[in-house]
Length: 625
Image (cartoon, rainbow, N blue to C red):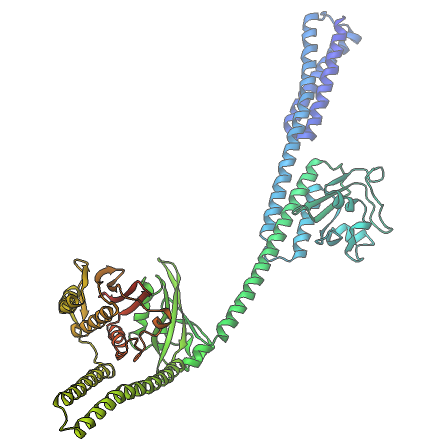
């Protein structure tokens, strides 16, 4: 090949390389860098052109070096190809930068949406549409929400160009899905629809009504919420074709908008529910007949309901922010209530249940109440204390009336029983006394026998009247600290002759090292004797009387068990009733007195029995705290 042709081809390749460099100026924006390279290539072209001109017009005095020209040709070709290959690389970089810019813009839009906590729905959809149009470089668009049944689309926001040029944007903004075209297909098919040539598109469209702005390109994106299309955004007339990047950015933007709307709705629904609950609680508190008082940790009263006003005589405005909670209690009572709240013995730590105490009214009257209270907070930080109290004055009056009626009823029963118990012996005494008087000179043995009967009946009357006196004139116990086991053993020794006479075995099972107990020895001895006597009388012939003691859950328990005939269930329910007895000559006061004594010791007495198998009586004494 002639060296001249090699020179021409080198010039051509250098020219192409210069053009590629100039094109990269637009693609990359690096004006100075590619301008310098293009200028260098132009100078090379000029230099090679001068050489070519000298060859053709003046004759080149030195022949061209074929090898040098081949190398020059290859260098020029490689330079042209290299610069041309750089162009797609920079185009990809530019596309990546554009995608990054779009992502940043979309993230900024979604972030801005999340900050619009106080914005209205209209403001949220307007902002979303503005961001969507900007992200996709579209000219028109709208945003709408679908109803629950996907029957209608409620368009909330139109782009400004639509508002300016479209003649139908002011029509009703609710459109039925069934009569919709392309955007209706996006709802029905639950997918995005991308159309870059509206007139030639094969998508199912119905055209647009007269007056509608002309469409060339269209991108419609729905957002799903639990398989339901919840919202729709449509943009159109982008100068360049829409692509997957536009669809992705629009989808993510619309999802961000819907999450924000759903969160707003949830927060508003929750706020409405909280407000309704607050109104309900306020109404419930204010209409409660019980007094409700709440105070902060410093004792300032925060809540004072109508029930508290009625009980204490204060008005709400006289209390809240004016007096402390301790001012509605007598001296030191508020501190006592607080100590019980922090204890675990009155309903659990932080709770006080049905505690009877006293509050003080505006007129300084001490009012008995039943108080339940709770601490609001945790073990480390107490925020408030709330108390619920019920006026006990009416209940106390009613209890006193009931007690008075019961006393009158018992007094009537007692009078009838005493009359009966005295009348019978007196009749016997009177009858035999008259017989002795009328037959005073009669047989001495018969008169002595009759007088002995009179003496026995008088003795029975004396014993009966002693029992009645003990029950009617009960003296409060004189408590002294002592060992209960010692008293049990001592009482059992008194019973030894009777046990031997009846052939009854005694079993003592006393727990060692019982804690000391405060009790009245004479009273408890009488209880033990009364119960043991009943057990001995219930056993005909041989049997076993067992007396046991034990400590259990803060109490000392004494069990007295016999192997007698037992007590029928219908009798068991009346066994502690005064003057009720199953024995022909019993006073019916033994167990009633025992129950009275145990109550005075803040103890309890329980009785269990099975017919034919015997009876067990349990005495429960509360240990000292």
